[in-house]
Image (cartoon, rainbow, N blue to C red; front, side, top):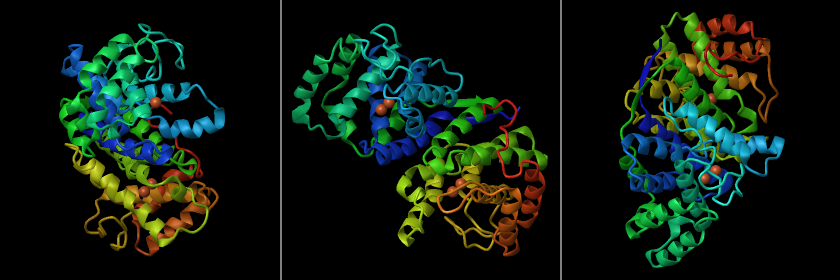
Length: 411
Ligand SMILES: [Fe+2]
Ligand SMILES: [Fe+2]
Ligand SMILES: [Fe+2]
Ligand SMILES: [Fe+2]
């Protein structure tokens, strides 16, 4: 068993920061949307007498309620889903994977339902969980009223608007809870640009010991959120994580070590969520300024992961994937002396994956076409030649195609 102790509240906050940035970038939604929903839900949940455990489940689901956004936007192009059902279904699946051991069935699935039954699944008041009712009212209100801009003088009008929706858009009990929650001090919290600090105080500490299956769920889902940011990287992090696991096996790592490497690989491009899609998908040459914006993603991965307790190694491995042995990489310009074996391994895997998958500026390549590029980088002492030789042996059998997920992980 490769059980890892993870401070889930800290990990969820890190993912939420990245999600809020992507939601802002992709939809032009106001910044910090997920965090405002989390703060409102915590306040409303307390009114229903929820204890810390229940509040943690509610607020974590609220923070992650739009986690399927990137995947939904790309899938919607394919399947046309005006009712937003896919968005809800993918979000539910992500939340289940990312909140291991929690009974949160329906919390995210029904976050667009309305009390009058006009939501995506036609559920009426009483047919979906209280938690979904609370996320739904907070979500609808934030999207329609831009809560981060409401001045204290507008509070009476806002409260009237909430009351008007009772029994139609919002369930009656959720409306009452929202009316209790919405006072001047709540408005101040919602307007605060540093609302992340309120979120930090709001979610109770939650440490979970998660086994490999949970790590696969958690890492795999986070990887998918990152990958679906761009059409061209749909399998990037997921594949690097699968390949990292395979290389860990070849290195004879124990289960815990393989699990840590898998998670580092799954999270390595977390900071890419903040890079605008136009830059990620630009077909032509990038300007220097655009290249600098792309490069910043590795530092942001570091900043997002660095405060998660017990994540020192995961953070170091994940954020060093663009470092080079001669110190010419980024973000820290680490050199051969400073790079651990796993950091060098992930750097090789990232290049292997990026070179073999189709990008706006090059077609996909098979194994035989990919290896010369890695070999030449190894000869130039940019990446580790020994690891490149190992990669050549291990990956040959897949011929540049997809590597299946580790046993027990969902494909
Ligand atoms: Fe949503
Ligand atoms: Fe939302
Ligand atoms: Fe990267
Ligand atoms: Fe990458």
